[in-house]
Length: 82
Image: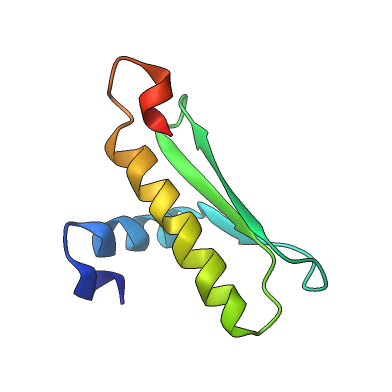
């Protein structure tokens, strides 16, 4: 799916997955979040997956935050990251 979107997000997702920059927790809780780790230069996505369509919605939403944060990681003002 991310490859089909273009713009480099497919390669970014592959790097996230291969680098261990995403994780999951308790399936009975819902939601997800994205954090930026400036010292590493890469965002991290955490999401609780429970096997529903909502998992796809949450993960793609957080991937949008992660990709934007990654693309703007070298900008001089930290507020641009988000």
